[in-house]
Image (cartoon, rainbow, N blue to C red; front, top):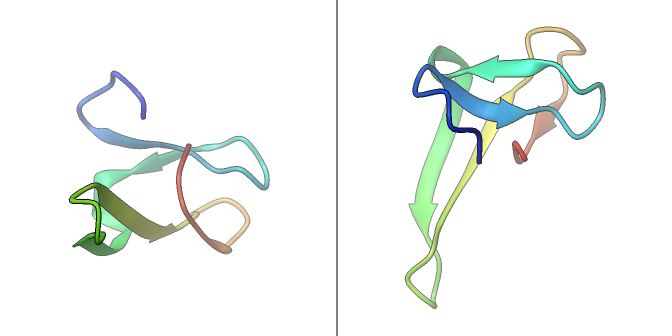
Length: 50
């Protein structure tokens, strides 16, 4: 994850920063980790930000 609080991280497809406002879903996994999916505003892909 990115240290910038207004960002979810970077798109693994194009490398652009993904703002929190583009978050689609956030959920807990079976091992109690938090995962999320977001749409990248630059390449319009649905990704798991890095």
